[in-house]
Amino acid sequence: MTAALGVYFPYFSLYLKESLGFRGAEVGAAFAVPPLVGLIAQPFWGYIADRTGSRGRVLTVLSFGTAAGYALLTWPKAFLPMMGAVTLLSFFSTAQMPMAVAVSLAEIAEQRTSLPFGHVRVWGTLGFFVTVLGVPPLVQALAAVRGTTEPEQFQYAFLLAALLAGTASLIALSFPSLPPAERVRMARGEGRLLVTNVPYMRVLLVVALAYAFLHGPMVLFPVYVHARGGNHATISYMWAVALATETLLMFSSAALYARFGPKLLISVGIVACGVRWLLCSICYDLRWVYPLQLTHAVMIMSLQVGAPLLVEALVPERLRASSQSGLNMVGSSIGGVASSMLAGVLLDSAGIDFVMLLGGAAGIALGVATPFLLPAARPCRDPRA
Image: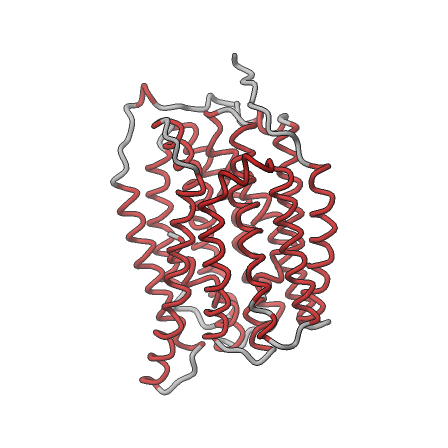
């Protein structure tokens, strides 16, 4: 699943800008589509999963749909058809990750295993690692054979993403399904419990702001590297540094979560990412940007491990998929829409350096305030009890 994302995410903005000739605002608009669609898709699929109790089967459908969406990206060359293709992809892909988190957490709870969530999540990092390193040589070879530029060949790499996503769907299809009587289901109308859960809403606020400040620079990072004289290989090597560190931190995330607590863990991750973008804005030698990639791992551990675990402690079990979908929705959707659109406009009007500077400064300020905004990780009191 994340291996397919490693083919798509690091290079899609560069493909749109360098190969298809999209303007900065159009690139920003294309990256704003997934979070916009996610505003509908994520709560929809979360509701279906919690109402039926068949979270594994819903994950299978999402993976099949994501595979079809990646394959469709190879066709459009103009802005509007590409927006349509990204919309279809986003209807499935935006809900895939939170559903995988919900299925993983449910499996850990049901099996009463001591396996930390970080040890499960690390396999996503490894899959992303393999493809982000393997795609550039493949693209370079295709470009050499066909006598074209490298960005033009990424349309064929998207077929690889489709194959990987399809493989993930077959794996999800093999998950055992509980009998209907044993499934943990949400009753009709219980979704409103999330809206009245104040601690949960406080987590959503912090995550939404974090994505609003930090997501835009992430989307445009390939453009930043290219502006500094780098190429696709440079982007790949920088991701390798980030992912190697992320792998190590994922294995220790459970101990760090227990030792420092979710407030400090999430705060440090947001501050680290803010420092990364702030320093990128004033750094013109890519050799000094490589060490900054280490902070990406801290941010991922805080927002994609710390935040889901905090939500798991605050929300009833039967609302697991809806709560994780809501967490991803306010982050990648609400925060991501604002961040992607603003970053695209600022790219055209003020340049990539200002995008990095603004996002970094805002991220640092949010990270400092985070311990005061987040709730304590107390076990949830089930309103039905």
